[in-house]
Amino acid sequence: MEETLVTRREAIARTAMAGLLLPMMGAARAVAAGAEAPAARPPAEPRLTLGLAGYSLRKLPIDAAVAALQEMQIGSTSVFRVHVPILLSTPEVCRDAAQKFRSAGIAIAGTGVVTLRNDEGVMRRAFECGRAAGLSMMTASYAEPPDRDTFLLTERFVREYDITLAFHNHGPEDKIFPSPFDAWAAVQPYDRRLGLCIDVGHSARAGVDPVEAILKCRSRLYDVHMKDTLAGAGDKKDRPVGLGFGRLDIRSIMAALLQVGYRFQVGLEDEVDSADPIPGIAQSFGYMRGILAALPAGPTAT
Image 1 (tube, rainbow, N blue to C red):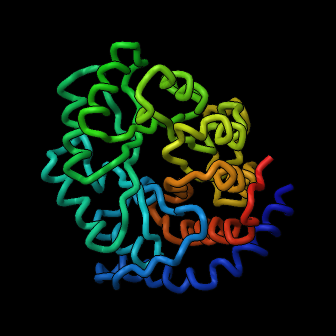
Image 2: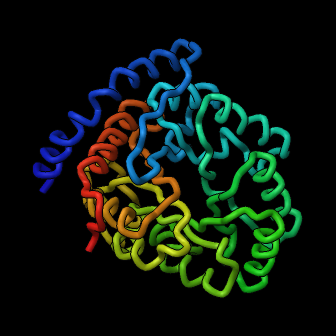
């Protein structure tokens, strides 16, 4: 099985990465030298918006993260809290940090997970930071299991600020939303701007087929974290690997997103080597581009 995946990966990624590896090598040199990167020239992405979950660059300071995205020609990202500190700092700081990405030609699709509480002050600070950063969507969860009052408070702020929330599933160890179906069931009584972020790796560990989750939850699916893993259903410890080296059927996942007409970011989340993330991101992003380019134009998921 592993040999088949590697062969498939090499066949697709070798061509897809031809225009990516040299820029990535330049990104590594620019980050190491503290040099300013040239303006981003993101390639046109057919039919899906491919981007990077900012968590992948969590060990890089903001200027280095922006430079790496430019050099990789990745034009969309969801910003992690070490770069745009939603809830952790002031709206003014969040505004200035978000502007660094936009000035570099990088669209901000959303955030890493913002942890909310059933507290009006906490909730307002989070949404004030999100509005200042110019966000239309934030990926979120809760510090404690939410009750109806928590959701009603959240719904009030979603309506007031017109910012969509995508609740993130974190696998079998998560006490809030282990699987996307838990988030899906929880948001049904509330405003449609309360939806979900499907993390395909954590979904598989929770025993949920990511393709099934995408097809069922399509109407409230606002974010996707794309990754691969060697962990199996029920495993409470993840075993992240580059796309194409794990257990997940990345092609079928992307085909399902095409089938449902998904129009938000598909964010690669690389967790393999946080200290030196750029080579792994280059390989997996190239693989993701290659898979997408090879998929037929019409509905393909079953």
